[in-house]
Structures are given as C-alpha cells and as structure tokens.
Image (cartoon, rainbow, N blue to C red):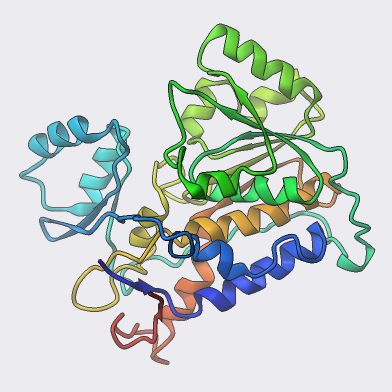
Length: 341
C-alpha cells in the first residue's frame, strides 16, 4: 500500500486550520494533522482504490458498496474504448464514481472560486458567539462534510445529523465516524420519501444552515438546490461540499477524495499513476468549509456557497506543477512528498 502524500500537505492544512480557528474560537480545530492524518492516527485499515490501467492511461475506480455489479456491466460494455477521459465521462453517466488519472503536465490547474463578494471577516472582531444557538442540519457523509459540521458543533452550534439505515454513511460503525459526529444530535429519516421528506422540511424551517455533500443531481431530486429552497425557506443558508468546482467540466461528477487526487494531476507525476496513502482532499475541504460556514452565518459571505475538494487542493497542484522551476513537475518519488507510517 502506498504511503505517499503531496509535499506541503500538512503545512497547508495548518494554514486552513488557523483560518478556521480564528473564526471558530481558539483551540476548536487545534492541530490540523490530527484531522488530516485521522486514518493513521485511529489505525484504520483504510484501503484506497489503486489505479486501474485502462487503454492509454489509468482510471480511479472508487466504488461504493452498491456499485460493484454496475461497474462490471459498464466495464464489459466499454472494454474496447481506450480514451480514459471519454470512459470516465461515460462512467459518470452510469452514476459511477470514476475519474481519469491525469498526468500533471496535462491536467488543468483548478482555480478556486472567489470565497465571498464581501470583505473577509476580521478575526479580531470575532466574539466567539456567531455560532451560539445556531441550528445546523447536516446532510453529509464520509469525511469532508462531517468534519466541517463537527467543528461547528464543537464551537457551539446545534447540529442535527440526518442519517438513514436504508442508506448508511460509509464510515458508520467506525471510530472515525464516532469522532466526526461526536457533537451532533442524530436524526433518523430518509429524505427520499414522504414521511422523511416532511420531517426534513420541519428541520429546515427552523434551521440557519444546511450543509450537504450530495451531488447536484441528488440535491435537485430532493428539491434541495438553493433555487428550490429559497421559496420554501428564504432565510436558510446552504453550504454544499462537492468534489469539483461549479464552473468546471466535472461540476456534476461523483467522486471521492481519491478521485479528485487523480483528476487534479497529483496522482501522476512520474512514470506511473499513484494512489495516495488516504483521501487527503477530504479533510482539507472540511477545514475550508468550516471557515466558510462561519462567514456565512456572520453575514460576510454569500447565503449559498459551495466548497469543492478540487478547489481546495488547487494550491497543492500549483506548487507541485512549478516544483522544478520550469513548470515540469518532479516525480513523486523525488518530490519530497509527505510520508507517514
């Protein structure tokens, strides 16, 4: 199993943690490495998806528990295609979390979207009470979204974690899940159906912020896009934690952190594509999202925001792309990547 992580990861994470702590209150986030390195710290047997060689390149096939049969059918249908970009796009039409491993020399550097149309919040004026009594509905799963809402809960917000036994969180039952959801009240409901949807509407009626990690298509099906919510809940803020930027060709794609790592070019800097030690884009996005959420509730960021893993890792991509001084990236083995374990 690989132990590679991008160089500068923990220093960059510390910057994101400091930004969040200035808004959440000193010590809420603490040591960023504790959040970024959770799989190792908690000794989880987390096995990331290794690159799948395909045609003229490689794919990140990061399947969920219900995707196996669909992937087998897809692979049989498309086995004769060699263009990994086209294959990944077709897989997304099948609702499969498949992304191409792009060589960094070929990958477009994603530029993060502007975070606010307003002046950034002055940390010196933060009185630590922005989150007191705020009602937050957490419709997220796995790592990035739950980290964001856990930090908000630790800072004083009242977080209601929506879960469903019919569609459980992929981390449910693990020590990581317990730590990422310790400061929340669990609410069992399935928003896809009548009774569950009605129960969710009641939660949203009194909520200040809805945090999601669903795809835009799933949000649309649940009538939870900002333009759908504004009529029913005009005062509600929304924060979507997604894989890719809203103005990118992949804006509607389904992907986990390893898939973002692959598509951004961070997974192919040498002769062979390489999976990371774990899904490091997730905690980076969770830290950034916590900062954005506080700015929203303080009234200095837009009511409806989106934080993407691809946008958050953009500084790491830019740094790696320029690491040799002439724009040609160095190999992973020789780049001084952060290695732990």
